[in-house]
Length: 119
Image 1: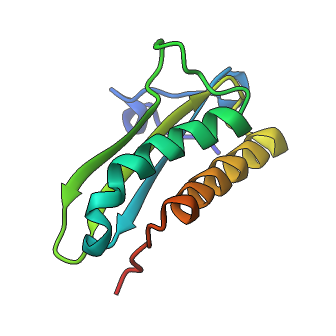
Image 2: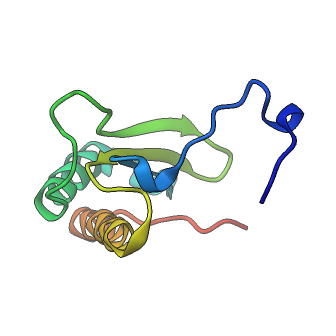
């Protein structure tokens, strides 16, 4: 594709194939009934991701977070934010992303926390 320079003015452009790191952010919807379980869930999410995603950046140079972010009308919002030393393209990225999602799910199962589906 080609773009007019006026369309790109003031915007950063990245060549993802040259970016050495990737970022994965997930917003989770948790039942109000499970509010007391959230501290254990957050701890378990971080443990599971650390165990299964060896290219996780957890040295403090990039965010590695699992936090209770908001009260919503029908759920509690949790945000999981991770960075990896993996390019944001290709099968290694997608395989790692799946491992992260599986880690989150295992943590929810271990702690007995239930996700709320959107209406």
